[in-house]
Amino acid sequence: MNRFFWQVYLALLGVIVVFFAVSTALFFRADTPHERHLRAVTAVADLAFPEGEPAAETQRRMDAFARALDGSAALYAADGERIAESGEPLPRPKHGATTSYLTRHPFTGVARLGDGRWLVIAARDMDPPHGPMLLALLALALAIAAGAWPVARGVTRRLERLTARVRAFGAGELGARAESGGRDEIAALASAFNHSAERIERLVASQRALLASASHELRSPLARMRVAAELIGGASTTPARTEELRAQLARDIAQLDAAVEELLAVSRLDLLGSADHAPVDVLALAAEEAARAGIEASGAPAHLSGDARSLRHLLRNLIANAQRHAAGAPFSVRVEPL
Image (cartoon, rainbow, N blue to C red; front, side, top):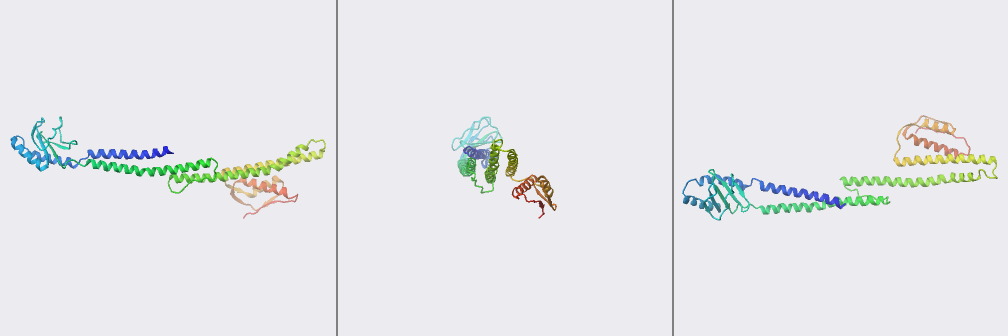
């Protein structure tokens, strides 16, 4: 079950990792306020640094521009040659660049002016708080991972307990039942197991009772058959006694056949759990069984929904018991609807 736990937990961690990666990518690729500011600075720089003015005037304007930014600034020609600079040294524009862009290390804004020149700026407040943001995302991922642990463990622990109950039941502990509290799929599985276990327990108990009944029902006719078999053909057995023993054997065999048929019928009902119900004419069924036994059947027509084979077996047993215990007294079958 530990494998299933790790599958669930690692799947959750995979979702967290994907979420973290996508969030980070979107964060770095988003149109940040710095990019919007850089576009505004570019528009202002086109007016603040007209092309062709004296170098001294351009440097004066650059110093004022850097002070306004509270940072550093540098102006480069289209070919990368430095025209004016104020503050900390700044990197030259990338070779082959054609549009404005931001750099991360160090964080600077590189603006391409309308005449092809480049303005590089670095303000003190331009460096975005990427570190705290990434730490916050990482803390969120760790919190989700920590929260997912008890959830995944709780699911798999319930399955482990259910597995233990199933193994105990398979080992012969027929009273073993699973905890079926809750309304989720695991609770439904535990409830289905309990229902199946209860039915199997009833079937086993019924089969045990059936075996006990069979041993009782079969022992007497078998004992009589054994004695009759030993006596038939004996030197002291007269022909009349032999015929009597043979008749007794025939009755015992019939009794054994009826007992086996009864056991099979009971076993069939136990295994199926319920009979095949269909409309049954009880009077007609009673008349057939009475005629088979050589007695009369009467009464009013009666119909019910049931298993014809089981009802026939019931009537046959009732008639056989009456013949066995009536001591030769006449009797009949009568059907009275309720």
